[in-house]
Length: 360
Ligand code: ADP
Ligand code: MG
Image 1 (cartoon, helix red, strand yellow):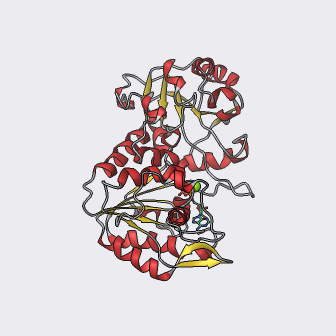
Image 2 (spheres, rainbow, N blue to C red):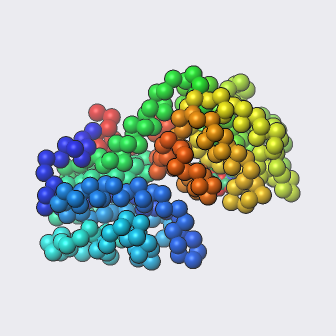
Image 3 (cartoon, rainbow, N blue to C red):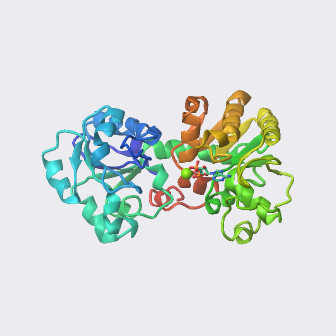
């Protein structure tokens, strides 16, 4: 994989930099969790400091335009941005370049999700180089992470390098003393990670909706608790009775629904975490957005910090849960990837990495 250090000369080069600014925004318009945006600053500064003419390309899955949050982005990145409403504005902007440009939501173009060649070729027009620093979208075959690499010399940015190295370390680290903690929802993205780590970790602690799924598959009546459709199919190939799978045994219920784990389970999870040397965590243990059901998630976060183990965490909700306890800096590596981190940890081939030559 070619990285930014392989770029011979950056001065006055027109660089398309794919960044990831896909963050939750509160109803009042404020950015709820700026972690991903802050992680882009280093790469933008690095290119700008070397005299490159940079245009940022980003997507939002939640809203059409970045315009209302532009001011907040500028504060977080500590620089002014030239806002480009459409791709047509890119070429004239580069010709009269004076500061880092920022193209509005790339997902406004149907060609983006279709990984369309003609769209990617058009997007590449006027640029000399492409740098991908958007690890969190690398599990998608979208034009601005995949097809674009056919039309420009392409390089992995600092964040892609960092994420791939640190997550590969997490996979490769000796299984002795290594545990993974899986919670949250969207079991289809998490079960493959559990499967991949069955022989790569000592213990797999399971909470959240994934735990409900496993209970349901074991034939336990979970009443109206949230669970995924087709749990049996989803969990196929996973040994549900493996002693490595450690599950909550008591629960915090509301109207018959499991919304968090109970005090006995918290004690049990604490004891496992205290002994661990390497911990990988994704997914809250309960409905942490409601403080009444945050005890399991908070206990896990605090236990990891207390353990002194090497810790790798990721996932938008997991980061938000930890950040509200002001503990984010106490983890050794915080991945910007949610789905992308899970795909990587599951050992899947990721289109965005493939197009950078990662697997060559
Ligand atoms: P991440 O973004 O960290 O990968 P997910 O998106 O997979 O995490 O899951 C987080 C969501 O799962 C949160 O909104 C949380 O409230 C929800 N959740 C966890 N446990 C439960 C539960 N028992 N019942 C309902 N929702 C749950
Ligand atoms: Mg989430």
